[in-house]
Image (tube, rainbow, N blue to C red; front, side):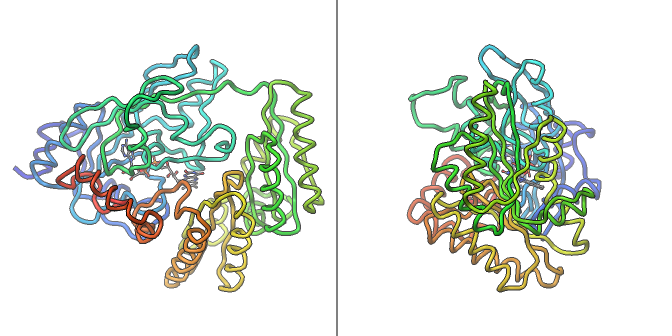
Length: 451
Ligand SMILES: Cc1cc2nc3c(=O)[nH]c(=O)nc-3n(C[C@H](O)[C@H](O)[C@H](O)COP(=O)(O)OP(=O)(O)OC[C@H]3O[C@@H](n4cnc5c(N)ncnc54)[C@H](O)[C@@H]3O)c2cc1C
């Protein structure tokens, strides 16, 4: 019996698709230029469906690629040959909320937006907020982070326990619903950031945080991206408790103005947010941070007073990528992602900016600069895409030279594999041994990340 018939036999026809548009949407992501259709897409609704899919794939020696919301950027979902795409989006139940313990247990297809809607009435929120409405399973698999990571941490910090299904069908429970543990090797963290290469995440227990009683947001506009990055570094160095600290460069401000029909200054800006339990503390902290900005040349500082003004401010930050694709229709986009030790951030941002000017490429810089992490999106005519690849490579090499990483949060996928040996040295073969131990037949998302 062929693989598709076997999957239909095990899972039922309503969970197995070979419809062309479904195959197309599962053989690509939001940032990698190449795509390839998987053989078949399976929509799992429970752990048994995941096990059955893996059993059929083992029988037919065909790789399986877990699929969350498809918003990743580095080619991690693109099959290298015949493969099953295992879509987890129907596993979308919030299984339990324990407000007294600040915890929720969810299936992997729950998105961060859906989780936040489910817990808000308890006065709680889940902080990790990548710009796309990604699934919690995909976010764990890429070790995602976002605008509030500077205060609340990324996925590693906020995932306490995982259920995973290994390639041989075994189900493991990793981690405990506790804030800390010294018990044994941390296998839970091994699966976070593993990009579907070690196992399929079928349940997550995550930390929730009390919604802050008082929130202020502000923007400061600078004469250059260098000045804005230096201010960001000094804000971090003074230990001021920012909840969000985001860089948006002038080109990004310009495309967002056009996209949202706004008239904001088209200058490099820091977008800031502050959370506190008292209004007085909040005012003092906000003023101290804005003073740092002024000392670095920020001429205009705007506070967002009301919740509406605050959401308008963050809408601008979150829509940069879509605004850019709108401003440059027909162009191919590459979004690269690096993170460096904090003290190196201003110089690396300056390097990224200079490189855009020297190469004459159209691109914008945005970033979670409080974490030393930023992105450059480059928009080229499709036939000039190799120039964007070259730009990304030069930026990554410079980040590695100063002690940084080839990817702060987007993952390795296919695009960043070439930097792994340089970044990890003799640790890379050990990563491959771990892969071989957990997945000896190379069934799970082969050829991605270090696998
Ligand atoms: C506009 C935009 C803004 C973005 N901003 C950010 C940002 O601020 N921060 C950030 O970190 N990322 C960001 N991203 C990238 C993307 O949203 C993240 O990488 C996200 O974590 C991917 O989640 P997903 O559910 O879409 O996963 P997918 O893209 O479906 O999959 C990503 C990887 O995870 C694996 N995977 C998916 N589900 C599972 C599972 N249940 N078990 C095991 N493996 C699984 C896949 O095999 C693949 O390797 C952005 C993307 C876009 C388009």
